[in-house]
Length: 361
Ligand code: SAH
Image (cartoon, rainbow, N blue to C red):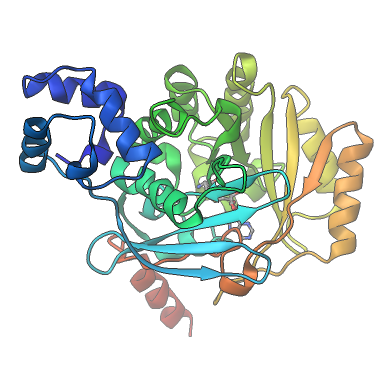
């Protein structure tokens, strides 16, 4: 049993199943997640016998950290190996008043959004709980403590590789470890799940582990959104907006963050901004505009800064809060949508795309 796969309740049940006291779970959780301990011998408040049993029956196995890189602006990227030929990336973004860790949830992604490097790569598999939480486990170790002894990572966003809500069970357990005082003790308002809009899973998330929610919108109408994000054909905008309204009813934060990547000449005109205002009229929300980050082979361009400003100004004039995400870490390909890691593509998307290109050529 890999103990990083279990939240406190799961660990208590496991201890019970081997005839030990369930309260051991809380002690062990603290060793694992507060102290980052991997070796049972170091868990000094457990008896010698129990330590030996644990060493025989269990392991503490985070993903293998294979590389880490720092950007000029202090952003750090970590590369984890998660099986032969597969790697995922995690990004730490320091700001004045907080430190945010951007965590991956899948090896690749099945959604095929054309503006996203991960989406272009194909899909291999879901990450396990240990692989999701292990990114935070490692980053905490690598980043150490701030001068006052506090954690450097104050916020977690599930905005790395993959669609978190298509790996629901593992993500829900990982979130419960992040929120748990015996785990990372993060506030629900400081943990954000970002989704392309998997409507039924948004409802399940609200019931199971309500945290802050960001929704990747990227277009104000179904025709354009389906072109940019094929998942929109399954969960079109009326359903998505209704799910957003249900989510905020009693969520940790009383608004949804709508992410909107601005693509030059595609979704960045004033009429798109006006249509967005109409679309989101009934949803308490804030907008996070993201200038497109290019990646090798990407077919889009970044909107010029004045168009981004004009787009934001239209939303703001309607009383909406619209911020523009600062591009961070792009010199190490750590910006939004640039995370590619390494994916053995089981969907054979790359092959299909090459075949299609050849057929055209
Ligand atoms: N699958 C989830 C989370 C991963 S993506 C989702 O879709 O929300 C995190 C954010 O980065 C999403 O809003 C995504 O649309 C955006 N993004 C993807 N590619 C991008 C790119 N090339 N430039 C800027 N943002 C991008």
